[in-house]
Structure formats: structure tokens, C-alpha cells
Image 1 (cartoon, rainbow, N blue to C red):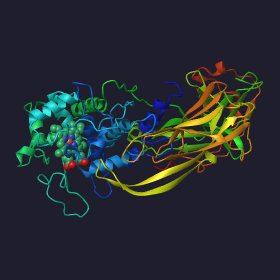
Image 2: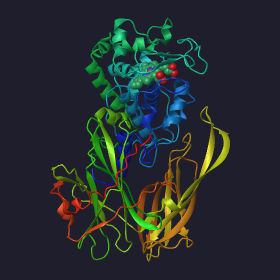
Image 3: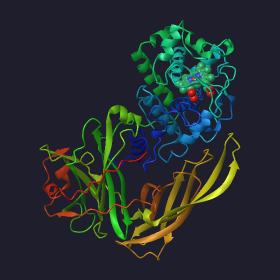
Image 4: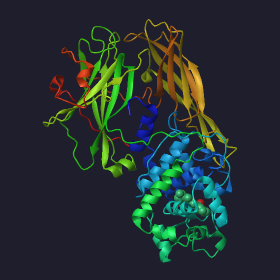
Length: 580
Ligand code: HEM
């Protein structure tokens, strides 16, 4: 892993922080093993079933289908019937983006669902590619014969034995609803709340589904119904003489079997789609890096995310210092001097931000940096030093020795001079699902800044949004900016403005400027915070006259750094909890 890797970074933030870059949390919808307000259904069960039904259209024979998000166009089918699907779709709708597909979100939701209810942590990869039309049908229904089920699972890529185990892994959470299967479950007596008969006696992801079945005291209505046509779990579970179910009565076997089968289920994708590496924790993560203008000043913003064990106290004496090199002038690339500044703010995350880190026993501490930058000097690269002030040596985070590069400074986004207004479109009816909804148009007025003197031939952006209600299509468009001379130049930058309309939730921009035949680009710029960006006062900059070459900091650990000691006491500590 080397920074920046925007796809890996975005997937990692989702998996370990449970949320989008703007702090909107997906994991907290399901964690800790929550029931849905109103229906009191297990949200985890709804999410896991959703992933199964999205995957179930895979066909090993021709490599089509799989986890491709096509389920959203298949909800009208009887095999995908139920309010739980529609509510799950609403849960997921706002989260996909350019680097995290809708199907990646479905798989991620299922990983959260299993982990938060006490199941295994299923290794997670991204890179699924979304379909924009319905796939083939093929999701098992209880009235199908055993042979039909075996053939359906074979097509999905699972053997008859794996069919038994995978169904047990799915049916350890959730249950059957009266409205969906009135022949199996008696009508609810509580208005507005379905009658759900759980598959086993716990809401946890455990092997009670197997042990209660073997003991003959299961409450699973797909086993002990007098309507034998509908007793699909009974037919499936006993199809190998109960051999697989007996093996699953060992809790460790159950967990490891479910972990590997669910991993395969989540990674079942159409032929030709290649998934990313497994997303593992980035111990010291750089995020939110931005050169911009705030309060009439050119500033550079960056954040360093460190991990903290939940069972230990955060060291309040710790200082985290950002160092950087100028891009232009006498000190370009730290030839003459190196600049540094302490963090402007420290934010401790909720230890329950994601069920994955909750289980790992860690949470995140973010060191936010905001520093003023002279346009004539700019910034070429940066790195961090962490000093615990407890006698241990200083830790350097420098991107495996390369330092963190600031790729370009020709075009920068200025969120604080940009706005988004919501315009309601009234109500409308979908054609391909049974849902009704309100639609809106988000009208953006966006401002970017371009380095003075570059005389650009074109200033523009590619706008992308695939988080659109009901996923009818993705916004994928180009917009142009024109010189906005009503804003006077700041820090060596001229301002350009443009407008854009979107009906989705997650517009991101790739900014471009064409200068002398070269295109400079800033990739994947979020628009979630604009003129409402929380302001952080920039830190005071230290100019270290002692030349520090970048090779000075290539090791992971280095001796205490001279400038560090002058910074203690300057550190502004404020510790609000990130609300979920
Ligand atoms: C022969 C195969 C299968 C059949 C016939 C089947 C059938 C069913 C049925 C009838 C329900 C009740 C749905 C409702 O009342 O709305 C259900 C629920 C569920 N199924 Fe399956 N299923 C099968 C395999 C699987 C697999 C492989 C998984 C995942 C690995 C899975 C996960 C779930 C979950 C989590 C629920 C509970 C949903 C909730 O409570 O909202 N099922 N299944």
C-alpha cells in the first residue's frame, strides 16, 4: 500500500470507520446487531439476505451475474418479495461512489451484518462492477424441490454440501414473516409490526441453527411446518443424512465454514471483474488532503489517523507534527529549510464506528492539520512525526520513505466559496419497483481556483454520482468553469465558477485544467462539505533553518527531531466525539 490509492483508501474507510469520508455512517445502521425501528426486524438478517439474493443470479456456466447490484432491478420478482428488501435498499442508497460500487456496499453491509451479530469477520475486497439492468432469476424459494435447489446452488458455484452449510450460515439470523409467507407464519396481532418467527432461538450469528435442528427442538418454520412443500430447510439440511449439520454443531467448525463460504459468496462476481486485494487496516492513514482557500488565505489541510487500543488511555502528551517541503523558490524540496506545524485539532472517533474495529479492540484518533501556505512557495510533499514524550523514540510516517506527494497545485477546489441548494421535484412513481418517493434536484454553484499566470485554455470537471435514489442511472457528466472576477485573487490564485445539477447523494468531482497542452487533475473531490465546512484556525508554521533532506526521514523510526520540542504547548487539543 502506498498513498494515495483512492479506491483502497475509500474501501478502507468504509470497512474500518464504517462510514463515508464525510462522516455519514453506514455501519451504525446495523451495529450493534440492531432491530429496525417499526418492524423490529433484524437489520443484519435483512442485509445478509440482500447480499445472497444479489449473488444468487450468478451462472457459473457462462460467467454472468453475481454480486453486481442487479438486485435493485429485481425486487418486483416473487423470489425477492418483502418489505425488508426495500428498506435495505434505502439503507444502502446514499453510500456508493466512484470507487465503491453499489455491489461493494451490499457486500460490505453483509460483512458488517455478520460481524456485528457475533459471527466471523469475513475478509472484504472491493472492485465489484454494477449492472444497470436486471439479471436472470434463480433465487431459491421454499416450494422448490431439492433437485431445483441443488441445481441453483451449482449454478451459483456451490456444491450440494456447501448448499447445506451456506443455508445454515444464512438462517442463523432473522426469520420468516407473516406477510411474505402467511402459510407458514400466523398473522401479526401488533398493528404496523410484522410477525417474524426467527429461524433459531437467538438473534446472534451462532450455530444454534444447527444444534437446535439436530436436537429436534428447532423453531425454524422452514423445518417443522406441516406444509411439507414449504419445508425447504428440512429437505436441504437432511439431504446428506445430516452429516453437514452434525459437523456444524461444533461452534468452531460453524464459524470457519461460514467465514469461508460467505467470503466466496460475497466474491462471486461476473466473469471478467477483478476484485481488489483484501482490505486490511492502514495503521497510520493520511486522508482529506487538500490545498484550498479559507477565509481569504491559501491553506493546506491534511489528516493523520492513528489507532488506539480501546483498553488503553490516549496519551494526551503526544505531539504529532506535520513537516513539508516547498514546491518553488529557494527551499523547494527542502533544499534550504523545512516547514513544520503542530496539529490544529485532535478528534477521537467512536470505538463503535464499525463492528470490525469494535471486534479488533481499537478506535481511531485523527490529527487534523491546517497550515497557511504562500502561493509563491506552495507545497511539494509532507510527512509526520509522532512524539509520545515518554522516552521512546519518535515515529515517522512518511509513506514508506517516499513522503506523501502533493501531485499538483494548478487547480484546487474551494468548498467554502461553493454552495448546494435542494430543489424539490414533488412526488413520483417508480416503474420497476413498488416504491414511491420524493425526488429532489441538488443545484451546485462551485468555485475552483487556478494558479495565476498559467493562462488555462479550459477549466472543467468530470462530475460523478452513482448514489441515486433507486439507482436508475449514474450521473457522469462534464461541466465547465468560467473566470469569476467578482472574487479578487488570493495567494496567487484566480477563481473560476460553474454550476451543476444532480439528483443523487454523493457528487464527486475530478477537476481538470488544461495549460499549454498539459492537463492537471485533482481526482475524487467530495462535495459533502461546501460553505458549511467547519472552520479550523490554521496552526503557526515553524521554519526549520537546518536543512532536512527528505532522505533524512526515510526510516520508519528516527531519533527525536529537533523542531519537535519547540512545539509542545502549541498543540491545541479539543476532543469532540465523532457523532454517528
Ligand atoms: C434453499 C435455499 C434457501 C431458501 C429456500 C431460503 C428461503 C428463505 C425464506 C423463505 C426466508 C423468509 C423470508 C421472508 O419471510 O420474507 C428466508 C430468510 C432469510 N434467508 Fe434464506 N433461503 C435459502 C438460503 C439462504 C442463504 C444461502 C442465505 C445466506 C447465506 C440466506 C439468508 C437468509 C436470511 C438472513 C434470512 C432472514 C431475513 C430476515 O429476517 O429479514 N438464505 N430465506
